[in-house]
Image (cartoon, rainbow, N blue to C red; front, side, top):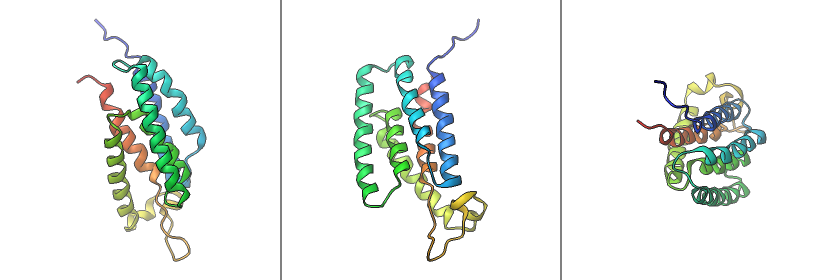
Length: 165
């Protein structure tokens, strides 16, 4: 007897792939293309439609959390403290994580971002591609590709609830 096909894992696989590409692009170019954030937004309603144990009400709450994260991120962006692509990626990651996992997403993002920042202060920085691996000087401080931390945290928080152990 074969196991039933878990249709809800199709958008989850798309989510994982797009997040991985966003992390790579941010590491390589310090840019998170809008088309990747848009792709995650387009995949999300399909996930809500086919995921077990998710309702339209849960989707509405997730959208509310994502909007709150976006507003907070926009304020940080306006002050020059975070990149615009990071704000959008974190908001869409919040959409996928949902209200129950949003605190975990934010904590994981902070922890992984701090770890990434520490790595960038070591000589390991030189093995990274693009601007993240460039040598720092007074005119060009070390740039932190925070999309890497956001994407990793989003995958850590979003994937496990989709599997029955």
